Amino acid sequence: MHNPLKEIDTKELELPETTFIRDIETKVFQSIALQCLSQIAGIELLEGNLFDSLLGRDRQESVKGIHIEQDQKNHSVNVKVEVNVAYGVCIPDKAEEIQTKLLKEISQLAGLHVGTVHVVFKNLISSKEAPATKEALEDVLTKRIHATAQTSERYGEDF
Image (cartoon, rainbow, N blue to C red; front, side):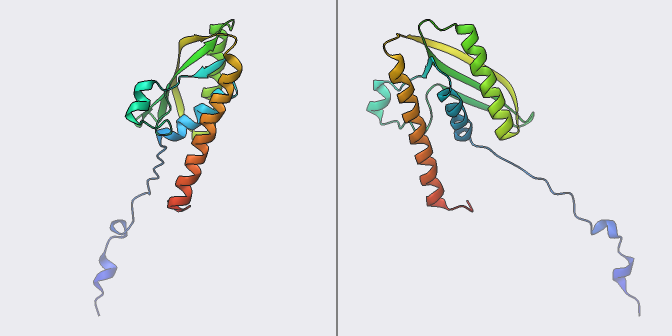
């Protein structure tokens, strides 16, 4: 008996290599940046304005002052953070501290190359306002963590 399956080239049956894809949402990078910025004294994030409040824009949807741009082709991330700085703080030293912490954390946690870390100092905080700003930053961070936990509970661990 003649078996036609013996004549088939085995190369035709080999499957191509598997391609693994990993996507990281912008919210993840924003959360990492929030964690880093909360550990740095003398700065605060920008707050939403009255216009945002009137339109009902939720601060948890996007964090004002943290902009993330992913470059899928080069597997890199570009970060731009806009912060207010306390009066009396050396701005070049503070910029270097922010850039170094963000670079280290994003590279370590996401496994991606950080192409740029752009720090924009938008406003000056008077020394009287500085203690309250850390509490405001921690409040935003707590809300972000709570929202992430609710999303995980809603969709489950498999999602």
